[in-house]
Image 1 (tube, protein in one colour):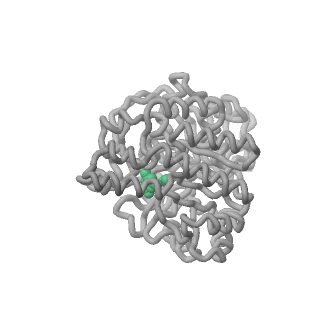
Image 2: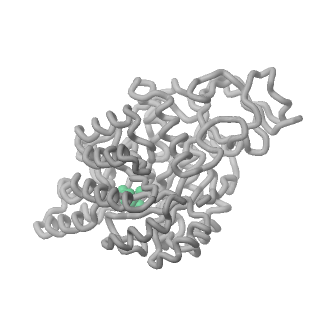
Length: 446
Ligand code: DOR
Ligand code: ZN
Ligand code: ZN
């Protein structure tokens, strides 16, 4: 038999170890992993000159925007950023214009994305006003639901615990429910108070988006999760308190998972003060004691997923005169893997940690079949990295429309060099080499 592609002269992370091997790809899936002599004939044989091949990364927390927010990012630029950053699958958040919270908005978004995407994309939905719509949204292929507790985004009244419980019971364990855990009422109360005092500075933003606001929302959601059989995924946990509540609930046997972002791991409030509003995000960067706790938890295996929370905005939106008007969020797709590989090179993380939190666990938690590991019969989604390449992050070269980063100028070691989606080379040394539309839309199997 003749397969589509054989990759040779490489090392690959397979079953918890790095091994020298070749990979044969047929029809978008891994046909065989083995020695060169075991490889079938192939239409194309590509030497990777010793690069390290990892499973294609999965980012479960991405704001691709497009539609009414296409001026910030669109399906092409967002997925180009993903591919350049080593991600072969991303899950798209629903706080769009219009908000994704019905079968119609979901289907429109899929139709819009289809011809533009360079990597695989699954879609979140916010909760609809009418809970009877939940069923239809799951049937429509949403991969997960997203619940914003920091502000009212979807149709479900976030102040109403009964409505939340009802919605969670309806979803049950069919698809995960990802939560932005900040307590809206605490945020608003503090924000009004601070605005009343004429406060308009970064410190004031930090006071409003307090550690307590995160802990309060996490505590509330754990209680709701306890009374339902929902699988709650906590997005971008930034505080020691938040993590501790989640750890305790997990120990009690609740089906919870949690995520941290690279910006909460690699930056602290000191960087926010140094860089300014470009680094403003919600939840905000925290002081070093929280950062240390995130790292400790991560090393202890208590963090399930690293998600970039890629949240592109224009530079004008990031530099509004009033801190309350600044759009919060950081583009992260093109910095996440270089930062994580730098941590591997310095010994702060193992390669296994990176693969676990950026491929294996995302695939398991969000039920993305055939993804997250290199194995025969699985998807041929890979990123080939050069662990030895040192360079400085240059946000002006991002494929994202958001050409800024709090990591701009930072020296890193470890670079994504080639990204393959379903066996097709999509990015080669930073250059997009595939046609728009080569990514697939992933439907949830709830
Ligand atoms: O920093 C953030 N950016 N936090 C959010 O909750 C929303 C996100 C965005 O969409 O920009
Ligand atoms: Zn969020
Ligand atoms: Zn987000």
